[in-house]
Length: 428
Image (cartoon, rainbow, N blue to C red; front, side, top):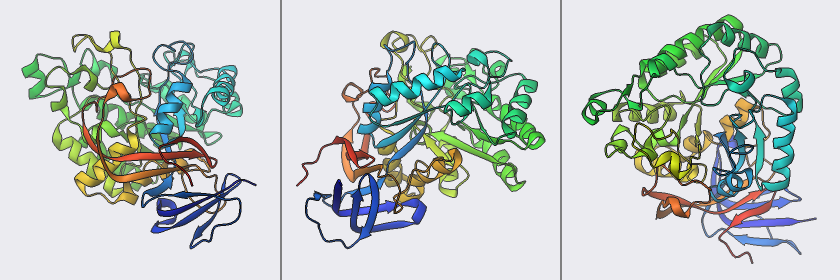
């Protein structure tokens, strides 16, 4: 039997509301004991030196280039970045080439991940064929193949009838629909948040209404069908009341936000900085603060990296022509810990949004340090200061919106089923 004993660690587990300096034992890949523990013979002892030991993160929105765009990212490179960032489970978007809209492709991703990835990789499948048609994918077959939910990634479903049919189909077997809710007609040729700054910069704006209009439509359809619905990313304060009302009305609705939208605002694109060109766009500071408070109050369930690698040719363009997207799986945990320090949000609250809540929404037996759970864990120095340098990140692409940002909190080690997939420590 393989055994690990973590000593002198601050165990933080949002699901069980634990935050205490203690010890934790792993036996054959499972968490076996937490408390005052005496070392056993033939047990590897790891001195945490006061670092926090937390559940491995679940990132609900990770795009990779494999298959089709391996020059941007592969499952292997994304997995390495995830391990360095304390993410032990990546939920993969279907916007590849070919699109993951067939059971054979779901199986390919699962097999490829087993062969090349160090962390858990679980695919979502496309809602519609090719992510750009009105023909629904075979949800039942895709679920049997291993798809955990259904989404068109960063493409919205503009046809309301198609969305209604997708929600109705999904409700037949309690499948989850994840939607990037933005009206493409209002989005139009916009490249950043619509407002005074976009006018001054001479850039086409994207109004907050492009998001709220689509959310309002979707929530009406959720009410009509009774389906489970997850709003992939919310970016505007105007969107939050509709989500709160839907929950109050008993609808099965959840929502996420990207770490970038919690730390950055539209001013981060002021110098035509294409790394901060995101979809949905970074909004104003009032919106950012509203999102932070919504996370603190539980209105926002999940924080995602929205990891979307783009090569240098796609990003190093005039702002209006540059591609949307930022990498972020390696900096997700760091961003949340920095948010804890800067905004005073309770650490358990921010960690819940990347452990317990995504596990609950997706139906995963993960995101916890409960006795008997698989030992997917991250050891992190909560107070360690550093500066994010995109060139030092493991992703094949370097388009980090947080590049150059001073942050706190650095991963010291990451474990999947009790096995180290990344470590800066020397075990005793």
